[in-house]
Image (tube, rainbow, N blue to C red; front, side):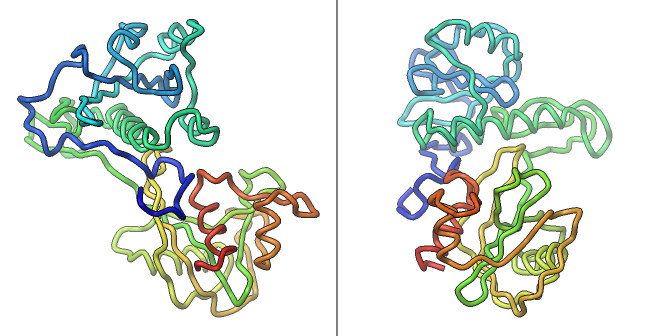
Length: 302
């Protein structure tokens, strides 16, 4: 990723050359000596030596595998992602050379190189899609794995199904030298973050920002600008980071969505990010796009 300001943003960096540009006939087998294999047990990924890209010999710790995707190539090597049972991942992790970590922890703790995280997000999202979309939404028949895992096909009605991505807007709302942050019921009591919500059908990004903001805190929004994006594989979302200008200041929260929302001065946000806020208030970790939006605000980029 060329943008220095995005450093530390989880799942946003990938050197994977996706297989869509490659003829299926040229795809090697997962046991090719040059291949690299990612083993996923739900949200847990087997790692060794600071990498989730296992050689075929290393991946032999998991002989029982479900769907195996051909993701593409990394530095010329074919890369696969395989679903394995939780018990198999535990067997691999019993070897001191291996560990099984959840994907969020891998990003938050920097346990693998940043460029692997985007590849892992791809594998996790698509394997999760396969697990949830075994049957045709058109006729109800069981569908079959196709195109190296990037498609499912229905033999009964001929419909092709493709992995879905759910777009989410996440916005830093500003007014003068302050920004609005909220606390969800899911957050720990000291943590504040940007507002966010799913786009609805037939809605622009800008209108989604305006609607979600009004629904959650009762504020009218004027200008909206795109800032950055982040794949969020929980299970398969795309976070679209925006900055938005509030037209008024009075906050009326939706208590179902938020426990609290308030305006924070730029210096106060800086203290929260530095861990020096006098009330112990905090923000999401650097791997989250909310952190990136706040950092950009503190540094005067937005």
